[in-house]
Amino acid sequence: MQGSLYLTPQNVQDTCDLGVAHRVLDTLGVSGGVIVDNLSYRVLWAGPNFSRHIVYAGCSPHLRFEPTDAEDMAFCHIALHGPFEECVVQVGENTVKPRCPQCRSRFVDWADALDSGVMFCRSCRVEFAACELDWRQQAAAGRVLLEIRNVFPSEASPSDMLLGQLYEATQFVWTYAWANTWMRNPLNDWVDRGKLKQRVDKLL
Image (cartoon, rainbow, N blue to C red):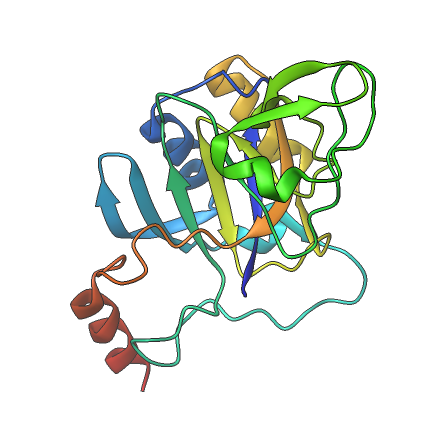
């Protein structure tokens, strides 16, 4: 399973138009051209300053910004999701037990309850929405999610400038987390295959 870095509003109920976030990414050179542009879903190429604002830990990794063929999704690119009417939660292979926001107890059976969207804390006897829990940056929650694809957990984080520019554009604080890549329509054309093939053909 591929992994992604997600940028989300710190307050999971905050939301903005995708165009606002897209302009920030475009202005900073984090994103390039558009692969898919739907009402609540955009997929973008990585831009010329991607590596300046998506900061990788440790040794400099080998990053691929272009696909090798029309089926290849294991390259760095960006997906914008939302805004949704309700908060969504995207988990990952390494998602840890989330903590109760009130008593800090761990939710041992969180995976079984996730589909319902409601979590019951056995310690303080209170129900919470899944997006209200403290996922300790190992799951992404929000009504707007900016997804940086092909990033392993804890491998990369956004620059302070990127988070700052998102704040300036939206007037709310942004945070980040790691989770599985979110393929919105994996059985359909989640990207324009024809457009992607044309780009691959130019590279070969």
